[in-house]
Amino acid sequence: MRQLGHGHSVIFLVPAEIRDKITALRGIRAGGKIRVADVLAWSVGETWHEARRLIPLWAAQGRQHQRQLLLRTASKGDQYELSRETAAQLLENNGLTLRERYCPACDGQAGQAGQTVLAREAARIQRRCRAFGGRGPGAAAAALQQEQEREREILPERENPPPEPQPLPAQPLEPSLHAHVEMFVRTGTVPPRSAAFMPALHALAGSSVSHILQDLCGPSGLLATADFARTVHLPTAPATGGAWDAYQRPVQWIATAHTRSGTVAVVLSPWEANALMPIFRAGGIAATLHLFAPRTSLATRSAEDLLLYTTPPLIPGWRAPRALMLTLLLFAGQLYLRSYDEYIGMCRLLGVPYHASINDEESLSGAKEEKEAHVFEPAAVHFFLTLFQQIRHPSADISRTDLGHILAGDVLLPPSAFSGPTRAQ
Image 1 (cartoon, rainbow, N blue to C red):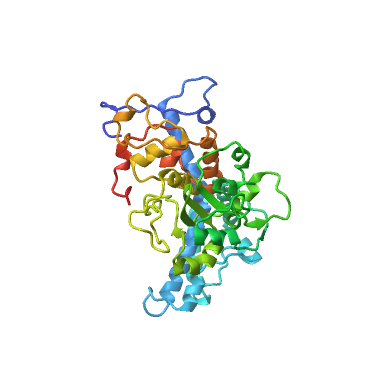
Image 2: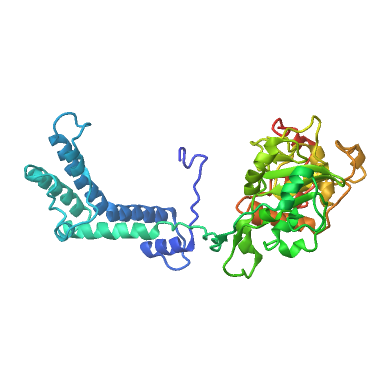
């Protein structure tokens, strides 16, 4: 506001409600011109009205200050080291008695010796209240109560998010170790049409993605045990598959073995892994137990190579087949990939484009990788997107993750996006 009128100007923009108040205050006819003096007069009037409205609150604060000052002055020793009794007297009462509510000048917390001082200070405060139009202690207390109630009314209400639906009460099923699972660990053989094994994606039967599962056909080699798929027994059959989403197991223990058809990976339940641990530790078997966890943050180490805590130790140079590894990442709900080559492989596995220009495909980094032998059906993208959002990461925003971009159909991830030092870890 410096040099106002000498190169600076002020324009008042008021809504219709404030314009009506100004015209009513200044007696201006409807549609009449409002001058700067009218705006300033209304502003000054509102300031005085606000001050008059807050006088009871300031008076209560003044009486409270005088009472506490008297208690601190009367305390023995350092005023910053109060006794427990003095500190208790400094506290305000949560509730008021009838005498205190309708006679706020009566305050017995300071003791009889301080009543004279409090009465003198209260009289000074009361004179100031009357100068501003106050009508006495009772009126001040009523106005203060009205002000407190008004402040509670105008406080913005907290918008609590709707409560998340709680899973239905369920009875856990008794875990069991099938003889065919133990036979697979010892010999690496999966009996045909065995009830102990199923394609890993079929372990999601009954969940919110089950209606898409029947039309999905993808690479083989990733299996799950029946005990991994069996978790709880719901007392009533759910109307929708979403009731089973809360009871889907995370992928943590994997047993791999080389069979006639190639490497097979079987997802085990934690109970099965614990029951089979003595067999794995004894060695001399066909299968290897791997500890696995999907990478949901760049701050965590990647375990997608299945080389983390293997029992028994793997032979040097062992690598999981690429299609099998990528399918495992999709089933487990991994969000980040280690390299641009894996990004290209994931896009090829899902049958989605990974670059806007198809003609330049062979010139891009990672284009020398062989094409995947198996590709999911077109419905796989919708299936895995629902799996990530409803089961694996129901409360997270995955739109900015690697798999979030892929499943959303984005082809905007350049090779430089995978060049960070944490990617290859």
